[in-house]
Length: 284
Ligand SMILES: NC(=O)c1ccc[n+]([C@@H]2O[C@H](COP(=O)([O-])OP(=O)(O)OC[C@H]3O[C@@H](n4cnc5c(N)ncnc54)[C@H](OP(=O)(O)O)[C@@H]3O)[C@@H](O)[C@H]2O)c1
Image (cartoon, rainbow, N blue to C red; front, top):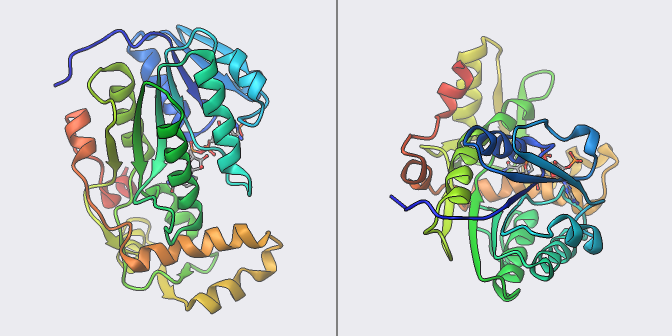
């Protein structure tokens, strides 16, 4: 157990989104004073003890610096994927340091390296490196696996999940469990310099998850493996930019390599409860 400490004012970014919104609610439930840094004030959740500040995005250095004035701890949610995401993150991190933030908790990605198969995963590694080099006194990385609620959405209208994931396994995780762990890290001392892996309790193949969806919903869902070439071809009509299609395709390819098969006990150790399994998530 970590002893409680004065983590000062906590700023939460991405509070209009999935993980940031869940974290902000958990902090409010704990009676924590927080500042929500949002792009659009009208969409900020209304929570007891929450101040709201607007910055037009991580790339808005002046806006971020103003929004983080007086903040001690920053929970940094990664931006929506863009070609310039690392530079956007770097601007936000530099703004935090200039504003006097003492601690950054960054939501990173499982097994992030400069050569991650998942091309968007490389952004997370570069962001981690920028945080390490920024001069911020304390940082903690929460490296998330793939969200389990995304898996059913990957099925086409006729119930096919198609991608180059092969027989690889991925330790899918629920956003509620990530938020539970983040709330602990944000409100306790003792996590400086730590990297925690936010995974579910088991690593499953896409075929196993398709079968689980069929069992839970009664709808016939199957996984069909694709070659990399087939995957690029099948997504070529979507009208997306090349870097974006590469991110989608390499998310399956990363599963095939086993890079996301790690099962960590970090959520249990931090929160005291087991992360939810895919089958249980579907049942609920
Ligand atoms: N692990 C996975 O399987 C997985 C899957 C998809 C994405 N992700 C990554 O994980 C992040 C967090 O997941 P989530 O579920 O919370 O995503 P989400 O529901 O899309 O929320 C993202 C939040 O970040 C804000 N945001 C996005 N770009 C920003 C920018 N450039 N500057 C400032 N704020 C920005 C959004 O603001 P608005 O509401 O105003 O847009 C929103 O509040 C995503 O942004 C994405 O990078 C992970």
